[in-house]
Image (tube, rainbow, N blue to C red):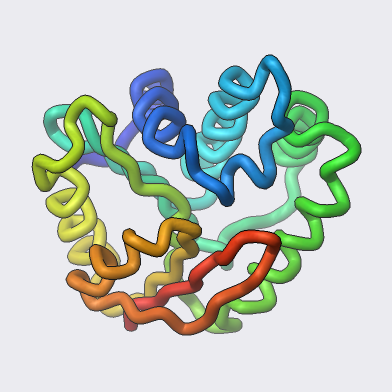
Length: 187
């Protein structure tokens, strides 16, 4: 794997948006209308920018798997993040869903520790290259990169839990948001 740069944005947005297209948690946030696919890509673009500013973004050597991690303790106010957040509201979520999205965000943050940790925000594999261990290889490398720093993630895909467990993650909590969201950690 290598650390991604702004030049990798288009490929990473494609990988993650396609691999999360049917994801319940993502579709909970993205306004569901005729522009849903465009809105999904804009959400991942937003996440990509946050990853560049407050974390790391990785892409596999063959450019078919990608991961966005955040260092929540680094996140701070800036005018650029205000602009990104406003674009997220108007271009992705829609005004009606903002209270629901904010409630979910506050709830998730309340489940994260106060100490330093890595938030594994997204990991995805191009659908044409899934089931070939590309995601497993990338996750192994990300876990190694994080070293002894605890890693937290959320998933709404119950079948992914067994996969994460193979890498030392354990489920610490489940949340009912109208769908089940599993919080996992690796210490």
